[in-house]
Length: 169
Image (cartoon, rainbow, N blue to C red; front, side, top):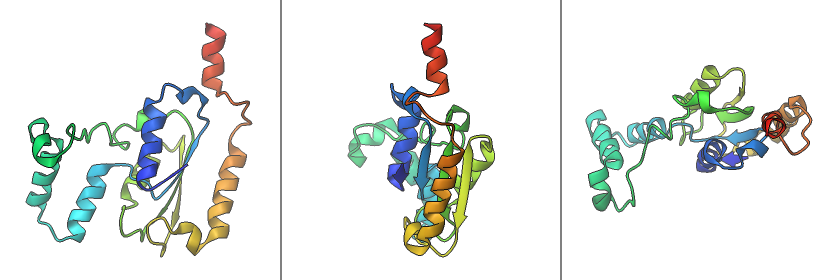
């Protein structure tokens, strides 16, 4: 489970971990699903003109600019875009996100749920600010997670995919 940027980390772990075969599903609250969307949202909130936002994203993603930005490496925005990379998701995902988040827009969460309706369930809230869903409606928040967990197949600590892989070895 991950909140906000932690949700982005959980998604990257899901896709990159050598141990992804033991992950049965993930729960995300107010996650950063696509950094471009989030950075543009923040740019709009700061009233930065679109050309300025384009320059900022280009600088953050340019190998030659890492020395200027202080980054060890450029940001690979394509690799961090889980909407475009939705096909890589192989386990159920529950996303809890408020349309009134104010920091990380729910648009990328909605787009991911639309791209993978077979695996991604989106539970939208309103009024709640960023990562405050439980604070606004703890009963609904906990009920959504309990219901989602109840629909997952019983786990033996290994996913069906890893059982098939072990049987083939």
